[in-house]
Image 1: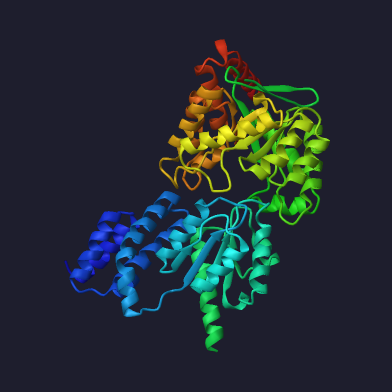
Image 2: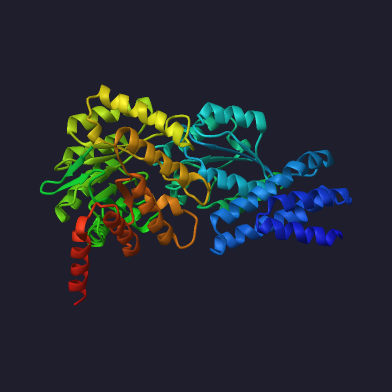
Amino acid sequence: MSHEEIIKGLFDETMVGNAPAVLDLTNKGLAEGMSPDAILFEALIPALEEVGARFERGDYFVPEMLIAGKAMSGALNVLRPLLAQTGAETVGTFLMGTVKGDVHDIGKNLVNIMLEGAGFNVIDIGVQVAPEKFIAAIEEHKPDIVGMSAFLTTTMPMFKVNIHEITKAGIRDNVIIMVGGAPVTQEYADAVGADGYAADASTAVRVAKDLIQKKRALVNA
Amino acid sequence: MHTVLKSATKTVTMGHDQPFVIIGERINPTGRKKFQELLRAGDLSTIEKDVRDQIDGGADVLDVNMGVPLTDEPALLASAIKLVQSLTDAPICIDSSVIEALEAGLEVYEGKALVNSTTGEDDRMEIIMPLIKRHNAALICLPNDETGIPMTSGERIIITEKILRAADKYGISHDDIVIDPLAMPVGAEPDSVKQTLETIHIIRERWGLNMTLGASNISFGLPNRHAINAAFLPAGMSHGLTSAVMDARTPEIVQSVRAADLLLGLDQWGGNWITRFRAQEAAKA
């Protein structure tokens, strides 16, 4: 198989969520001397971007997005250690958790899959995450973005509590904060002092990339 | 086991020997931006249409949720309940995760309400169950706890046992405990409906409790959701589901429930089925 054929195969098989084929082609590509960078940035990420775009248009549905993401994760498990060796710059590190008092995680997991698919290094710290746990994880992992999820109107106020505690810990400026979940709106995100909000998984990826780019531009300016 | 719900003038009974109880889900601002804005401005007029559409569609009970962020939810929920009770004699399912809002709702409610809901977490049951007892209401209980939403029926049954022990402790009859066997999106987890149906079956066999769930969840993220919801409900009913918080405005879904009532022997000789047919024909004429 030529490199072009492998790239095309990876793209097509990721689009349809064929995990065994994606894993197989990834290994084949590496064996034939392709760089992990090329596999990731020329095939896998464009495929997930296309999945996201189709989802936003209403042409793709949740299960299709999920299996595409899962297919991609399988390949990433192989590529990640290799990418770390080459020192390739990651898109960004995203720390994600459902707030304290809340155990809902379906939406959060969907967002994680799409973020991973976009090349983010996603660190999921689970559900019922208390403010001090967010802070400890920020200090440990130094993420670019912290994502907080809440499914209930009663647990949404934890966004504000978390942001307040993160500010008090003196690390608010180190991170971008994004919030989301079924009852959350842009106005609510603004009111609690978050930097970003998205209504669905695919939009979340777009917003996350934009926010990181803006921040990096600001730092470099 | 009968869960009896009342307004000032009407009684609705949930039971394994009763027709399925349709709880209309529509009076809920989650995901309805315009409705949220109106409610925030104190404008409750949308509710009038939501009540009419759902009652006309075949709802037996109406769920009322006023979970609008950044508002006085207790006051808003109390006003909404008073309004709904002035418009219909259907009993109400008072829906909030804010305990003060449940309390405010129960204060103004006339009759015997269904409250939505508590989880199996000790600190939630400790506060909500005495409230239920004091107001002589019925309570929807979700078999999940602080550790997360259990994906298997076995774990859900263990938490259901815990819920029943708590009900005994607070002197609430098992008739007034309605378990929510947890409906999760099948598009996100292929086995989830199987686990829900199994949970329903075991709870019915072991305790004969009434059960309700948020039926529309099942089809989240999938196309042609109505058809999936319409297929799910009869499956749930045949396992022992006695009610659902659901779309009462889509004839396809309501009809599938009423047809299942007939097929499962809960509408003998088709009395309800035929009466509804005649009413529809008369409305057309």
